[in-house]
Amino acid sequence: MISIALHEIGHMVPAKLFGIKVTQYMVGFGRTVWSRRRGDTEYGLKAIPLGGFVRMIGMFPPEPGGDPHRLRKASTGPIQALVEDARRAAKEEIEPGDEDRVFYRKAWWKKLIVMLGGPAMNVVLALLLAGGVLMTFGNPEKPVLAPTVSSVSECVIPASEGRVACEPDDAPAPAAEAGFQPGDEIVIFNDQPVTSWEQVSAEIRAAGAGPVRIGVVRDGEQLTLSPDLIMAERPTADSTVDDPEYSEVGFLGVSPIIDHYEKENVAGVMAWSGTFMTRMLDAMAGIPQRMGNVWDAAFGGAERDPETPVSIVGAGRIGGEIVSELAGAERIVTFIMLLATFNMAIAIFNLVPLLPLDGGHAAGAIWEGIKRGWARATRRPMPRPVDVAKGLPIAYGVAFLLIGMAVLLIYADIVNPIRLFG
Image (tube, rainbow, N blue to C red; front, side, top):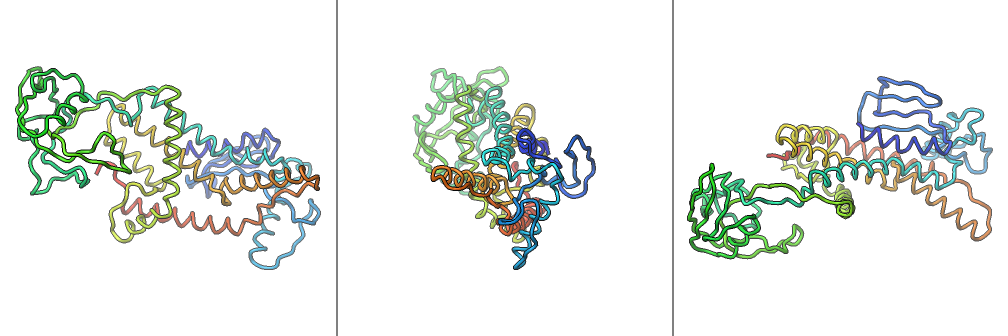
């Protein structure tokens, strides 16, 4: 709700600065549960917390060729009737003396700033949240590992298979057979001291198959364990998620604990932000194809892909799961990064150049600027403001589609939600 409220403030503040009359600032939809009027603007909360809006007068210009202060009633069909009704409603909001405070009369660049103000607010909020985490707690993508055992594998699973559960035919892991336990601090490998996980990992991989001697500290006591390493398929140093590479190396079967995360400076935060926005754009572009999985999960009992979008119900459930499953700083950091992701998603989604989204109005403002620039360059009469009301039939179609998606996501998040922790 705070993210939505700030998004709408991002529209309202520049609108008021540019002299546009703002009649309503509302968070939520449906019945008004609280409101207060200050000046020209009614501020309030509505019953359904699924969005918000800022109402500015004169969003649509009068009909071309007519008196700008009088709308001619002329309908040639249902689509034209929708456009005329929208213009009529916009005209009824304009009171005497407000003619210069309407949205459509403002310069194209002012319209653009007003419409981009909401998404910009969410982007700034996302970067502030994420930047605060990266500079104080550290980058969750850059863990600094300690040579202390976090978990011991029960079996050997080839990395290329992508499994996490052992099967009857899997060979037992050397570490489990040798008696390693979580909390063991590895201090010696083949009579040589080791002080970092990087050293331990490199020694294990290079040792290949065969017996080794590993000194560990357990409950303040130093022990020597003698596992018999085996060769196993593991990711190479150059391996990535999109282009995995594997090689046969020595394998023990222990995972290290995370000692801390590498902190970022301002330059590191900016570099991370660029990567973050690229990932979000890719994720948003993939929403249409992922909706098929949501449908299958909701009505066909298919496993829910964790990469599918969620509704506000799903986001709330994930937040609750984080609070209940994680502890301490990790809980706070994960929750903050989730909020950052949510805000970036709001911004990118609203920038889609279709009405009724902010991007649709922004596209109209940009097109108006192009037309006026061309008219100025060619010494032609200035064109009328771009009539975004003509795009209302598309807006109704988009709104219908968005409502359908929202209903499907809410249902799927109830009957087959995404589970972060199994």
